[in-house]
Length: 166
Length: 153
Image 1: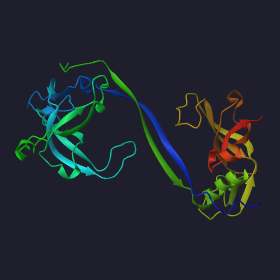
Image 2: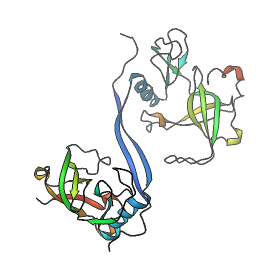
Image 3: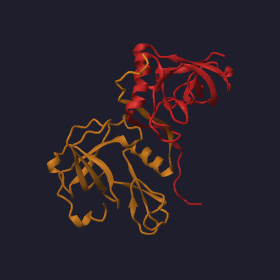
Image 4: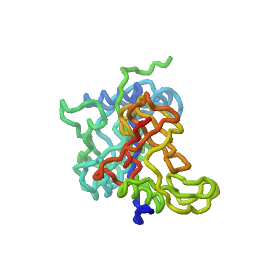
């Protein structure tokens, strides 16, 4: 054999594997630990009074400290949403499902949430939803402590009540 | 100092991983097929450099097309070493301390990058090393079909 094989290898499979330690700041750690107690914390801007969730140390709008932590309701309003029809590796949720921004009662910005117990075609802006928590004893203080949000059946919120809280 | 609330540190071990396929092209593809199917290391004669490994299909000196295929020996002389004392699992090619090397294989005029995992205290510039092939059923057409190089003198 004075030649390599005529048939080439077509491709190689490879991966970049980057392990690292994530360190939550004070606010994110307080927020996560509170979830274990079924509490959702936000922070209030010392100048404008706006409430951010997850809590931010300073307002991105006024740049002022947001140094007061406040407890928020686990109910809120779907401010915007999309219907997911494409599977994502590592997420075992039946398709289609609704991914939504939810403005919790008392918060001035929305959090990202999954909405379940709701047909995709029934999802709408203004829909009232509530958190479904993991059972007592299973919550560990991370973002999976809220399993998902589900419709409450209350009347829809008027547009002006959430349109500036996306 | 701010009066913002404080708490104990919270940490988590995370992993970012990017899995991908890399098209090899005809020349590197045949080079890899030679390792997989023949346990041979094939190089190409190119203008300006001599026998070049790995064979990329052209001369890296002047861009001219590569000439004939040339088989080189799976042993040679170490020309450069970078020792890794604390490997990162799954990122580096070895979980134990190892060394990246450049090895000038017998019959080649350029050096191939690979690793040495054993006898690191005997590894120096100028050391003689030899390829340790993976078993037939484990060779997939990858530079890692050579598991590593071992020091032979």
